[in-house]
Amino acid sequence: MSFMLGFDSHCHLHFNHFDEDLDAVVENSRKAGISHILIPSIDIETAEISADIAEKYNLYSAAAFHPEHLPEESAEEVEWLALKRVLLRPNTVAVGETGLDYHHCTFKPDKQRRWFRRHTELAEALGYPLVVHSRGAESAVLKELPTSLSVPVILHCWGGDESLTDIAVSRDFYIGVDGPLTYRKNNKLRRLIPRIPGDRLLVETDSPFLPPEPFRGRRNEPAYTRFITMGIRELWDGSMSIENTSYILWENAMRAYRLHPENRRADIVYRYGDSLYVNLTSRCQNNCSFCIRRSADGISSYYLKHKEDPAESLVLSTIEAFPIEDFTELVFCGFGEPTLRSDLLMKSARAAGARGVKTRLNTNGLCTSFLSDHQVMRLLHCFDSVSISLNASGTREYNRICLSSVEDSWEHLMKFIRLAKNTGIDTQLSVVKNSGVDLQRVKALAERLQMFLRIR
Ligand code: SF4
Image 1 (cartoon, rainbow, N blue to C red):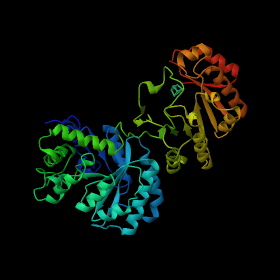
Image 2: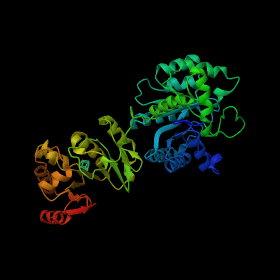
Image 3: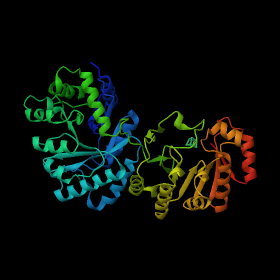
Image 4: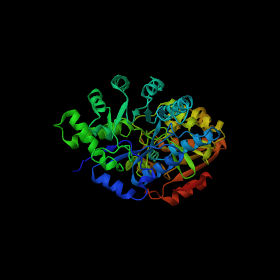
């Protein structure tokens, strides 16, 4: 049997249970139609391993401290920073699993709640979905979660009763169910399924734990997602095909993790070399023949195509949350022209500058078409350096290569270059060599302008 699309929305492939045969486990899951897997983690070490696995197999991961694996007090801030570094990795798309565990109670409830709040605030600041663990603490988890959260909440391996499930449903949370759904005696869990809207239910294996029938007592793995899916199908409508059931659950998980075209989250920041890049917009006045946006949605597994401009507050809280001091510089570049959001651009650059981080603006230099000279100078003074896309040696070549929607674009670009030079800020020009440009003429122009030319 094979599903076209399936999503194991919670699967701990990082545990050493999979050390010997991870390739085969992933291959088996694909053969069983599980096209997507989310690997949550429990601490820094497993967050890094999960991110490695996600990148290697083109899967997704989440990073957080599980309530049974919280940092020692003396290492709290160092580990928190390390966690944020993992959240910068391209396939790490959620904060999780965090939450409360009053069943094992390895740590005091106060400490658990403090860390749960911290994770919740971080998820909100970054716009990342939040994966929540609750054991013996379902009511407490619902009480802790703010009513105003703007990010999807995934209640993984849900064990709440009917009234708590109704509350979770009323708050639009996603609810994950696992292998125990298939256990003969588990009518309590089966009774919950009709109470959960069809677009809020997630299927998860929680591998290597909680194997479904008929694998009880053995290691669980993502290929067994289909056995839980079959259980859901029976409780929904036995006449629906297993492929359709799997597809609906796949779509739910895609929305829950903000991977679905309906609500896909584009990365606001991404790592490239030693620098951290900031992606403010996907809009641009040009449509250059060599632009990566023509052929891709992102760079090295980062998804960068904003459906609409990210909110100013989200951009600023993202920059604030991440350890930008780790990087040589913060580069405002992304998948569009950053000066189109000049106010936010200045606020963001100033925020980084206040933390002692070097900033660079990569621009097409066309903002003189909508900003006054004074405004342009103010903008430029927010940066330590500026890189301007020259891209051509004159008007005709620029129009041919850059297909600009700005009238007199070449003249605006030349004006911007003059203004940038006048600021005394470290300014360079750039050109893309295989774009059909006359490189010799561009080099000669850069020499006349007495500016450094970077050939890309
Ligand atoms: S100016 Fe930059 S972002 Fe805009 S189309 Fe050209 S290469 Fe792409």
